[in-house]
Image (tube, rainbow, N blue to C red; front, side, top):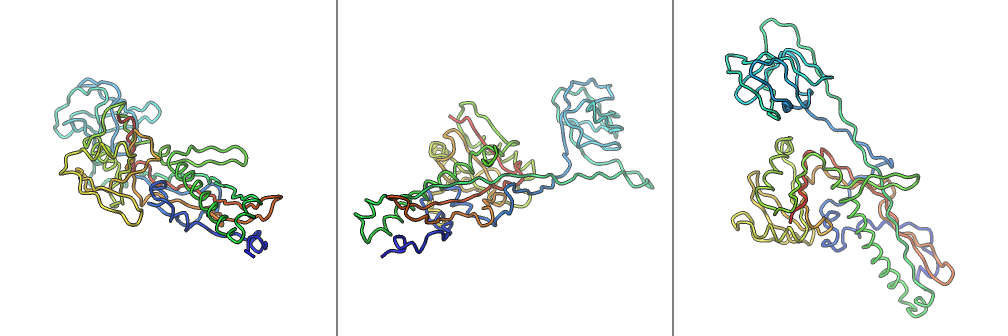
Amino acid sequence: MSKILSGELIGKRESITDQILLLNAYQTPLLSMLGFSTPTTQVEHVWFEDSMFAEESIVTTATAVDVTSLTVADVEPFRANQVVKVSEELILVTGVDKVAKKLAVMRGYAGTTAAAITANAKIEVQFVEGAEGADARQGRFKPRERKSNITQIFDETVEISGTAAAVAQYGIDDLYEYEKAKKLLELALQAEKAFIGGVKYENGTVRQMNGVRNMIKTNVTDLKGSDLTIDVINDSLQSIYTKGGFKNGGMYEITVPAKQKRVIGKFDKSLVSIPQADNTRGTVVNRLVTDFGEFNVSINDNLNADETLIVDKNRMFIRPLQGRDFGHEYLGKKGDYFQGQIVGEFTLEFQQEAAHARIKGAK
């Protein structure tokens, strides 16, 4: 008699996380790409991120050549006795009004030529004005920023009827395992979609995590029906570079749905290498040559048909809640049917969102 029929497995939890990674990689490419990381111990998973002070802003109001007060979009980069640059003119900051977002300045610093400043002109920090024998400059401290995501529960029930059990006879173990494998694939696909497109939501005992799409805020390009081009990809990579995303190397990948994969396939052939099999994921990837290096291009049809993601795999972690990785528990005979449950609880840690990019609205 099988263990299921004899009841030997009732209430015994079986971890099936490894089986998730062996499922069809074409359906769950993100799961296959990242795998599962170390567990979190709380339903709200918290991490902290360091960042440098910003180095530039924009002048929001057009300013004449002799005006000594500049209104800027963000005063964070600036402090007194700092030399900044607008176009070819060097300017000395003499004071900062954080409330009004204004800089008191001395124009035409170090013999540079003062010029009228247009609205939205870039203003960039160059260096501080150092004086021999000066006292220590007032220090600045930027605290680490708290980031978090919440765990989401994924569950499904495996069930076979008494009739199916009777027909199957001694094959009941295989039939049950077959049904369990199908439910596991359904759950893996649900988790994949949550990791990509989830929206953070909490209502009592219901928790849903933020996904990649919703977490990328800084580098988002809306093509509004235009074609995806190599220039658009290079612009997104430049945005990542400007924010310091490549500083520590990273492990970047360009992920596209099938529709945009065909678009990339039509790029200049000198930019796209011959497709290669990626045996670790079972998918086919290209190598795309850009102005910022070569990157894998992989297909994920769980993305919107009009979008492209450029992500650093070293800054993404799928974390189970401790003791709540995908597991199966046989519940036994329930009336004229046999039943079991698959449950897993996970969250996504997505570090330094400005180190990633999203392109949407492609034709």
